[in-house]
Length: 234
DNA sequence: TCGTGATCATAC
DNA sequence: GTATGATCACGA
Image 1 (cartoon, helix red, strand yellow):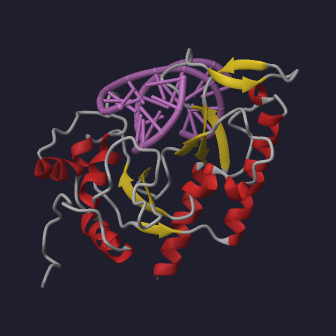
Image 2 (cartoon, chains in turn green, blue, red):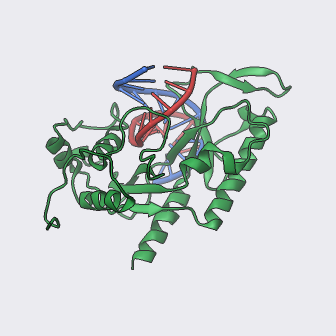
């Protein structure tokens, strides 16, 4: 079947293979969000202030990710996580990339190999997107997808950051962790607002309530990973 | 200008 | 509150 001129369509089934997922994702490259939304019967917001996850969910729809809020990878049968990443025209990420929330208690004895962060990042399909705020979301186009598996060096960097941060959490120092800790990974609030609370360990080993935290990939790390993929392609 | 801390929507 | 999807927006 000739399909190289076929327009992308909303997926009716999950991708049966990694090759099929990549094929679907590549078919989206160059397409504006406005066209994809209209074709799917979605209304494109005029800005993302009140629709922060909108583009990510639209892309899930086209790739056949099992929608919903289930705590698993986007493509569990393939072991692949989907992430959209907004870029400047120069290819610089405009935002950090959320990975997952971390529990702040019960971390004693957990290893990097067992961590949620590592499991989430075992394989990621990055879908770049024009992230310029000065143009409306409808005009923002998708880029070529990148299927990424951390290299040994990247894994080691992530592991070091994770271990440093986890150690502080375990030692009751969560409240002194800032986004400046870590080279590739950082820990930041992940909550509805600054009043949200979750259980954690305090400086004297007591149980405390603090803001829920999540791990994010810093833009320098994601920028490098995307550039590596470009070099491998040419 | 830019990164950190704060925030938005929605399902359950 | 926690999970999903992230970006906003102000102080340094």
